[in-house]
Structure formats: C-alpha cells, structure tokens
Image (tube, rainbow, N blue to C red):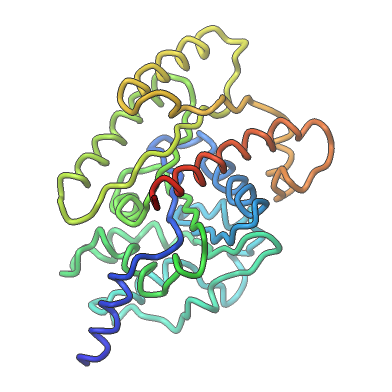
Length: 293
C-alpha cells in the first residue's frame, strides 16, 4: 500500500508540461462549446496535441466531436471521475481512461453524459476534498504530460462541478454576450474565482481572455454594452484581455451544424473566423510561454 501511495504522490507533485484550459461562463447561450471546439482545432492546426474534456452534462462538445452518447457501452468522464474516488467504491464500474479517450483526426476527446448532472450529489458525503477530484484525476492519469493542451467545456452553472474545473485549470477563457445579464454573470464568476483563491489550497487559474461572442454591432445597445463590459474587464485585468468580437455569423452556425471546425472549410467566408480562432490560440500559447519563463 505504501508503494502505491508514494507513486501517486510523485505523479501529483511533478510539474506537467501541458496546460489545462477551461471555457466557462455561468450564463448559458454564450457559445462556450463552439469556442472550445474551434480553439482546440486551432491549437491542433499549430501542431499541438490536444484533448477535449466535456464536463457539461448536455454533452454538446461530445456531439460536436462525433460521439454517440446513446451508443450501448458508451462511457463518459462521469464514470472516470467517480472511479477515481476510493470512498465511492460502491459506485465504481469497469471503465479505463484509455478506453474512454476517443481519438479524432485532429483532437482527442473524453465525452460527457446526462449522468454528470448528478456529480454534486454523488460526491456530497465524501471526506476527500471534493473540489480537487478533477485535478487529481488529470494528475494521476498524467493527461497533462500526454497532451500539450487539455480543453474543458464547462456547464453554465457555478456549482461543485465548475469549482472542480476552476481548481483543475491553469487558465480560463470566458465567452460572453454583450448584455446586462452577461455582465452580472461575470461578476458572480469572479466572486467564485476569488473564493477559490481565498481557500489557499490551490493556485487560482489565470483569466487568459474574455471572448465577446454572437455579437450584432448593428444594434446600438449591444455596442454600448460591449464597450461598457470591456472597460470594466480592462480595469480589473488590464488592457488587451478582450478579443475582437465574434459576430453572429452564419458560417459558424453552419460549421457547428455539420459537426466540423471552421478549419475544415476552404471557402473565403471562413477566412476571418479562422483568423479570430488563430488569435485565441496565439493568446493561449503566448500565455503558456510567459508562464514557463
């Protein structure tokens, strides 16, 4: 038993080469899944090895990556997380990480399922630090040593699952809509981030970028709200932390409907979208380099 404990400890203490990134926002309908999916492909296009973790019970990222969540025998991140907690042995099922990683042409993915919505309840009575389950799962399975980037798509909540994501992530990307609801949601999001920092048991992740999405600049109220939110973000985090807005474009909707990234289309109408996702990927790699130095 002592041998296994020491081996596990050494794995957790080694500094992994890869980074864990999460797309989060308490508010739904801001395009987190589309952003995560295309950013993963943008990083892959640059030659990086990328794993997507779908941690939204809606499993939209899983579907975008071509998984059939209704397939007989389908196993998801939910089973893997439950299996990683010794105190939940009664709930363990045969599920191995290597069998749950679906290898795509460009990116790999571990899918989600509706059962993940019961994660908070499943771990409610354990003594193990509940907020660190995902972080320990990633460390024990050396996923950040296997992949350059792990991209997490989180649910539109601020529950225990999102706290786990925040504790496991090195960096955060925050898609938002330019409206008052998003502005309030961002405030709640930052409060949770501060709470994690105040815990003192884990380093809070850095906010790499805020991504205005589904923007219609023809509407003055959206332009005004975007300017107001951008100003508040830059006061809090400094200049340059907000990307160029992603407009409400039909090509992005069409690519998602076909379960393809924007990089799988050669037509001119996708050119500007590719440039924007390249910018998001460049922000990530620049941040990663500055972290390592």
